Length: 334
Image 1 (cartoon, rainbow, N blue to C red):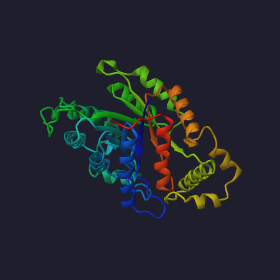
Image 2: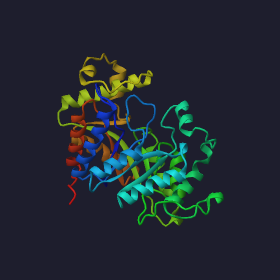
Image 3: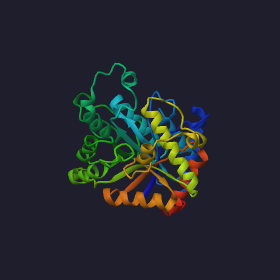
Image 4: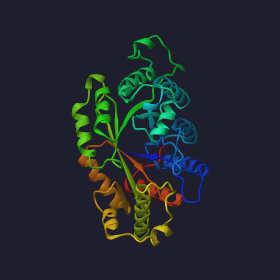
């Protein structure tokens, strides 16, 4: 099983977007040294807590600062954009960093309705055109003839000797079925829809279109924090729960500090939810986190795990990825 990273470039307490982006670049370099397989950059818009609004730009910088790890989008929200332009962007990235670029696409808005309209700006194609966009983008990124007849003779530049690895991101059964239909790898967001993950990933394999000439490959996206101090584990868990409480009440604020989490008067119900096995997050000491992730892998049949970690302190975030690398026996690249 391969272990990878999803980075949303979180803006920590007292930090700004520039600091968040600098942390992304530093963390990517460290994960490259630790032996993680991929480093994916997310796409979120109109957010006061997440700085990654343009994964294509961050991919170029992160790939330049690393040497071995694959770098890609987790993902580009294709529903907003021209598949032709997305193909051009990632073909250019592949020319710059051959054999290391991933193109993960999703159909979630990654924003509110008004922001989604601003991103589309004049594009009247609805979400029902998403499968056509995927088909055309896949053709253009691979130098093949697109599905849309009007664009059949359109060439895509630049010419590339290799092709980005294309993934479909999903947090629902519908997107997973698109991955199966097009014969593409699937990355399912357990941290968004944990109750659906196992069933959806088994359905993906059962419905996978082998006429594509490919075999199914599935990654599971999990939220996890590891720390070797039990007291700090409890504080990190409380900080995540407090952030969830704020988000559910409509507040867009940076992750609370550990001091805020320690002082917050949690109810018994909130504490029970925080520690429930049904939670979307896995927080604990390294071996306990590994055991929970491995149990999810066995249940879902995942080939790969993509780990999302957000903590109030960047030091704790780096430490978590270091401890997980040790727990899973990752080896530095040669």
